[in-house]
Image (cartoon, rainbow over all chains, first blue to last red; front, side):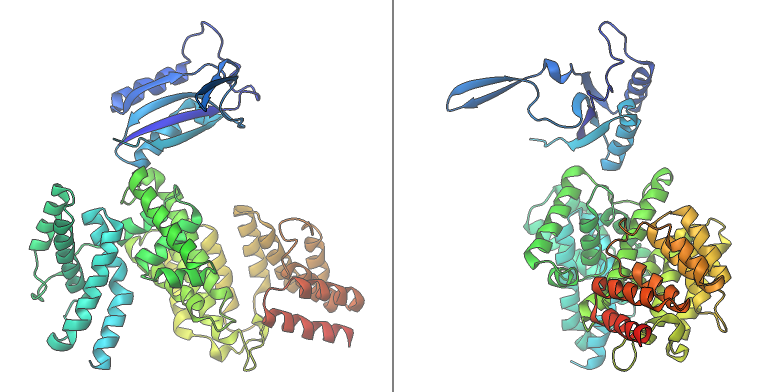
Length: 115
Length: 411
């Protein structure tokens, strides 16, 4: 089964302060991605810019409304994701627990609704 | 139909329902189908056992019949071809007319089902409801009644839980060793909640709620059979049977609450106490202590012959508090110390529990204080504390008990 593992970190608490322009991937994330690629579960993943760079778009009555910021104010914000292919939820939970962001943030495990 | 056959089907229902459902869930992956087929199998037994006699292995017979139904139904519903094949292969092994099915042909899948029902990805409420429906065979209206929620709410809860199991890919399996401790804890928590729900209702006349106690003990025994090396499962089972053994003495002839020290010991269930001791011994031999084992050891002290060893009990509560520091345990420890060292020592410990904290609505906190004050002869303060306890008490029996004590304190 495919799962989207969403990494949520509290930007205002400084959870992403260490990430600076031009810096390389941290050794922790590099090790995680190498392990998961070897395990054969990793389908993809990306880091996202901070929510201060987010733009939210809604179309109402044919009119496009564009606003600054994320679609919802939450305590933790989406910081990145991995798309994985796992045997079952227990397998996906195990992968999620190994994401470095799980140490200081939360990982939401969401099954892909296959078409 | 003879009463014998009816009783045999009822016994088989209690003993085998969970096993039949578990095997069908494993084979089909379809929880609703599994329940329907299990129901069909029991209906068939009611038809055929009076005519053909009770099979030698009712569980194997029922599982075989349920498998046949699963094949029929999945053919009709044109489920996935591979699943139908698998069920067909499993059903081919034995015929329902053939009484020679052996237990080896019917593996016990209940442990996997327990872990799936109690998966932490499901809400605790959903875990409890699923366990009662699939393992204990309680109906949705019965479960709704037991938890005092509308039937539609409980039905919805079960539907959502089964949908999440399917959509999120919650596995039907015993977890691997590195997850086993945490996941076993989740199963034990569900069983303990079932027991307590039933036990707290046992002062009333509500039979459905009371049956939760028996279901929890039954599932606890199954768990101990399937996980014989799990000391906390044994500890929980010992704890439950010790409490249950004393329940006939909890109320007097007028339905009034009788505290432990005043209970008529001849009413206690000796066989249950023996089982508790045996289970607790087995747990302790495994040398991996845990909170349920300590609580069972405390319960064991309370059923010993002769005067209660309050020093031992106070020590066990201290041990328990170190494992899981909670205000309820601190309260129990204070009561035990008041018995072993005297009411002053108990009051000193009670003073450390915040009255506006976790226990602010718990009647036993002021009740314990009242009792210690009464023993110290501080009658006005005792009466005041009894009044507070009375206002917080949840059942009539508790309120009447506190009222009697209040009258004694003010007499």
